[in-house]
Length: 325
Image: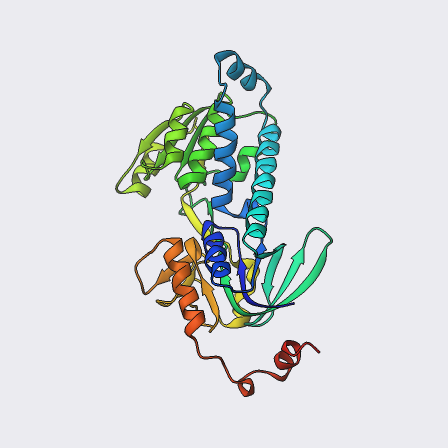
């Protein structure tokens, strides 16, 4: 399969890039990884669950929810909401004329991707003139010095037979606030330590009964001080990791920083020509941070005005594939 532009990811920026590219008439393919790997889609799923639970949150209903809640039940709710978000994303992309393949992409070369599709356990090969990485970030625990008790990882909340009686969530932006709101709705005494007090999701968490503590400065040290009591269950969301490990970036000469995020120039192009980063997966760019729409426009401008490479600079195998033999 050949196309002009391939977008890998399900971050908010991936959909902005698809909107801009299809509006410009570019033949666009979007490879959607599993939704659970996307902090943005996870936040959308949690917002959907909590909003629906709060529609008729009478005292009697909340008591019933508290008595029936288990980690397994909450996990099923989150996974179902993520599946719904995936279907909504596919419908949206179909509506704007983008081709969609749900699966995990891996670079074979700077122009070729191998895509593993879970639906039929198959492999598909895609050759693309330009590739945009929009895989976003995942939130996980920070590395703690040797000798200090490590905090729980977010996944641990969905293990075991019963919900914790108390819960402290440290950081995590919207996914952290959404998770705090979800557990609070099911009777867990929850508090959230955050730097972002302006987020709509934080307001939703407060409405759900979460105690929100805003630490505007010196977040790392103050957060450690506030979660010292051993009686509290603490889940750490502070570390943001780019979801890039599975992409096989070293084979195309692209290196990431220590958190798996991309280094890009002012056009958001990586060290490899034709491979771009957009959204939260970009760890550094020589231009100041911009909105996803402006980033997408900058990438499209670079693609449109790049001088095509002559055929003698391409490998015989690439020429053979492009010719359709």
